[in-house]
Image 1 (spheres, one colour):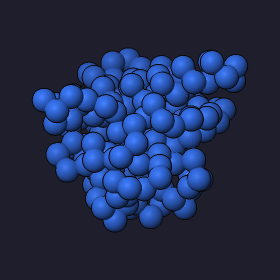
Image 2: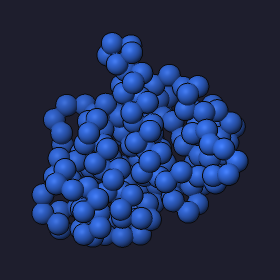
Image 3: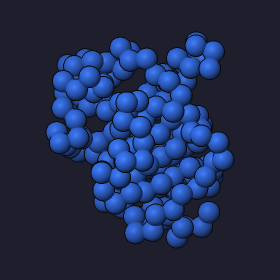
Image 4: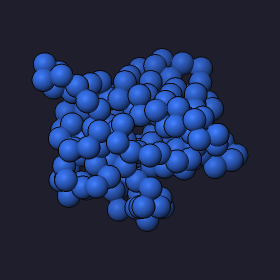
Length: 172
């Protein structure tokens, strides 16, 4: 893939062939290095990365590609212009929303292949119009009171590999 093929102004999907094990949705990401690392985690498990625009950077940004290393070319990536395109394209009943304010933890959820995991902006999280803390599929990672939040790329990786652990345990 060349640098200009994926940008916030040029939606491109790179198909991995089979159905993704998960869909990772980043709502208006702000930090290119996080997106690059998240892309690498998606490639590692066979997940598709969705970006809800606007992103605060161009996908040709060298910081995105550096963080994604040489795996970026294998990333199944799709960008959409607005949030309403996500529920229209991905099944709502298997969508989980991650927020530090959620009442339930990721350990309370039973994940399946094909689940959708939605993550908010690094500085503001998900808008309340998308999900509130009491939503039954709003989840958080448990942390001590001394940590406001985890790095977005770390959070996505933990969630993806928890899904992988559950799938392996279930034999799927």
